[in-house]
Image 1: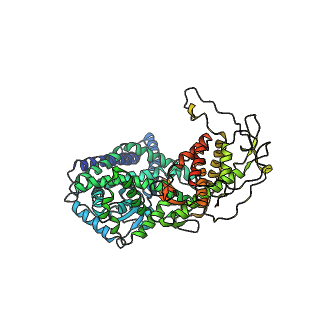
Image 2: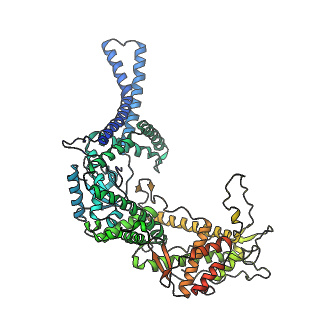
Image 3: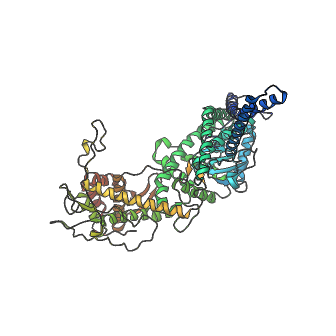
Length: 633
């Protein structure tokens, strides 16, 4: 269970072992007592029938409650008491044994980071709080205290009654300096004080158990009988959580305020500067994951030095953005990663965990899941991604039934993988040979196969491409589907200014979307079959992966990305352009040593408006020959 966030920790205990006199500490303890009162009332309700039964039996012994009516009442109350006690015992057992959400981390033993452990212990001594029992890293820009006394943590579990574990965001160690890291961790380490307070610790255990018990009905393989009991336990747990109300959140807020108050005396000036670095590190980490790491993960490669990449990305940001000026000058100070014995090994472990958390990759490297160094990223990720996307685009075009049309250029045979083929296809008017078969506006039917079975996005080695299937084997799909009428006040996704949208591009984008969705489903099936421990290890919000880094791309965005990849392949094959890595924007095409930043708008003009003039002008200027076949993956 998380107890804190970066920059704001928790309360402390003063001399004598109790909570200090801070306002936050007093408020936290009062909220903890409110939570414990809910537990006490639930316990009282459970034993109430048994207490009534005891009174009735005592009355019988003393001769006060005699007669047939009292005997019947005693039997009814006794049966009710037994049933209630059995139900309460079952609920208590499930709450005590329910598996809490386990946060995946990289453990840092004292032998792996002696200087970091020493820094944390010295910080705890200055704050007059117990030192954390262990230190772990998470591939995220956050830091907190975590109670790991539950057996669900396995080898990472700590004995009951010990201080919580300090979890530190791995990007902090590489971007922050030692003094900044100490200032950021001060309020978090102060949270070990409330962990030693009996009332707050008991309230936290109670809430954590209820939260885990409420999720028990969602466990697979319970069976009908156990599932019925689990649903009953879940209802009781949710009822108790509702009875607790806002007290748990207010308790955590109170101990956070108490920790912040206590940490004011520790490097107050450095904390102000360090908070700026927290926000900057978060921005750089998010950009690195979504723009740089995600394309590599999709290709079956995982960058082995993500944390080192954060430094490069933020240094590049400080070079470009005036708001970040001066941040790179800090790099002359001692980085916090120097507190580790082997920073490279720790960075690699955190990078692999990040790939598993945010993409659902395997837990161990393998032939289809290999690490990649930053120096090899342009060749093994950027170039392979472009050629895989270009191959997918031509595969979809091969599956478009291009029946011969009078005056049309095609005869149904697949064409070579050239950029000219795509330009011709996207600029041909509807109803001609360059469109999707014979489909048009006259109600005829084109032939389009969106059920592509081959996948070209994996890390397969380059080789000969399979020919397109015969046109008579492809299902017929009507291309003139009726438009869904919009309500009068509804927002039209294509406004009046977008009347020149390209219907051929829309149909091609739909076919690409179907192909990509199918390949993603196949990849998930392969991972589910090979990663046997994925279902048994969950993050705070569910099983791997916790969630996609980016929302799904629209069909037009997907088509624009594939056309851009094809243009980049043509530029690499016919000119001196090379694939490159932009630390803030990911894969980049380098023409003459400079990034081709003006390519995107020209491709969008082709995809959205069917206007090839801007792109053709760019191709002519850079010397790209669109009629030459490109090498595909």
